[in-house]
Picture 1: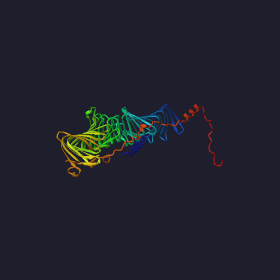
Picture 2: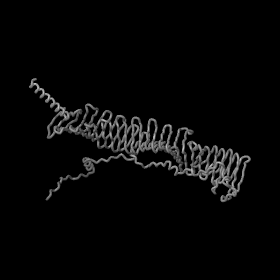
Picture 3: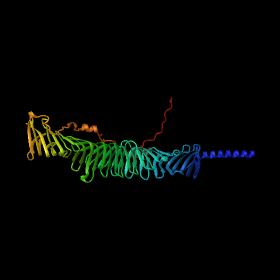
Picture 4: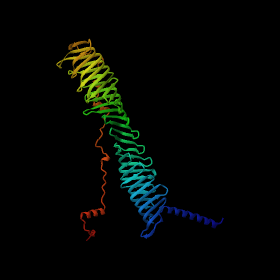
Length: 554
């Protein structure tokens, strides 16, 4: 083998390797492609007119530049444009500094960072080409095909199509305006995720608020709020986790759900709830509670499951309640297995062993319906096994039973009671409301009784009533009770029972809302602006020579 040839080959291979390494090293340095004029200056080269430079996959354009060759960096002036050859990213500004070693571009004044359909506008942007991350510090605006987002600070992670906005964040699209202080926006699926307080107002005036953040799909128009409230002119929906689909006008809530119908002044609570806005139909279950607001009073009702329908037709406006029914009002209380509340006539129907208490009276039947007028109990109908018990001034139990009953009330007290079919009555005869004389027990197909303070004042009977009077001396337990008598006062629910079932926290009307805060940004005037204002006011301070501090010892 020719030793000279071998030596030459090794030398050529080493030369190629060294040259390759040198070229690779040069590829990480800033290169000057062209300029109208090149001037030398102390420590840097000055490029003037139509400057073009290159760094790896980026082309750099500007009006003029200072190139610090030894430091591998440049200052760029006037119509700065940095364009990536491989990625669709272009950045423009009035001034920039570019470091070839760190691959960081610091762009200032009228900065526009563009990535396909997404553009970022600011006056202060640092762009790291190594990590493909752009950061702005003093107000920025991001615009894409759907949304406009602004904030004081932000980070754009291009590789992940992710932008994190911080401080005074505002998202605007054709349908909604959102305000928060922390938002993560993904530019490809166009989703926005917030943390902390979030407030939204729709173009229709709907208010959507969240205390603990939200998730918003801007294209699908779907929202998910945490500790959230959605409020319209007709309704208000709140839950710890609240989902809203705008296209379907559908709400779904979990944990501490509450749905308010403003027109009916009925608010429904539960563990889980669904609400279809167009149908005005809601389903709530899990320790459900209803509050019906009257002008001077409130009706409370508990149930396992609640269904509310409030359609356009009056006959189709109702509330259904199933299992564990308990209701209470200032002068009214009741229990049942199930219930129907018709909004159109303010009637409440109770089924399966219902019992109702009104001041000194208790009524029960297989089923019953009662009506509320002027916020008070107006009348009640009892069907099958109807039984009424009234306590008089001496705490005696006056009793009536029959197939059907109709009771009429005045100022919350029973005034008249009509029994139709198999009527029986047992009432105490009193002397001056202070002394019991005995018991009147009457059987009649039809009975009509008139009361005052729970005591019978007048009795009308049908054809051939069968009556018996027992003096007080001969009254015993059997004589003083009609068959089926059951005084169930211990089952009467009150507010304590209701609150043990569910005690809702009231909504704070003064809760912080970012839309209530004025959009005011105070900027300090520049020195030139201060001098201009002084000149306009007619006062200009006399220029003085700067006096330096005296040297020690003088």
